[in-house]
Every structure is written in structure tokens, then in C-alpha cells.
Length: 117
Image (cartoon, rainbow, N blue to C red):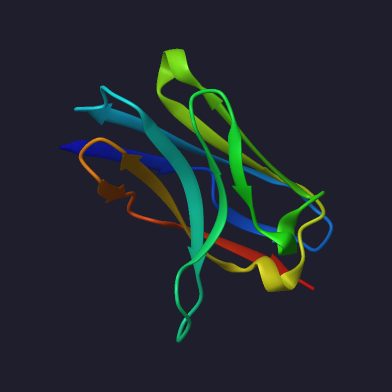
């Protein structure tokens, strides 16, 4: 099992910045991918960005050039630096941890990001 604890959401004006953090603990051995997804009411959860221990593997077109995903492997923590935020970025953001060998996924509790216009 893997446990994920997220932090960093909140309310910000358009054009502002926020940084999300997610720390993993538990059975985190083996090759894995960490990432961020987001979801708004009535819509499917969508990928924002993902990263292995060394490489950014995916970044949604809608956030390219504004959001940066990074990872501190020593702290088992993934970050999402969000700049130039737009009202359409408003969503609940979820941290994801995928253990490739076991092909399973774990999710954080979600953190609300609200961008006012």
C-alpha cells in the first residue's frame, strides 16, 4: 500500500501562482510514476503532468509553459508549480502514484484550487 498526502491548494487571482506538494509513503519500492490529475464537477479526471524518478513523461497541452512538475526522490515528494493561473484551472487536483511493476494506482485525497477572475 501507498499513502499520499497533498498540500498547497487554495484561492488565487488569475495570473497568480500556487505550488502543490504530494508526499508518498509506504510500499514505494520499484519503478514508479508520480503525477497530478484534476477534476471539475461533471467531468472526467484529466491528466495534468507525470514524472518518473528522472524524467517528465507527460504534460497536458492546456498547462504547457505555465505548470512545472518536479520531484524530490529523497523526500518521495512530487511538486506542481502552477504559474499564470487561469479561471479554467479551477479544479480539485489529485496526486497519483503508479507502481509500474504491480500495475496499480494510488490517489491522494485531493486539494481544491480555485482561480478567481
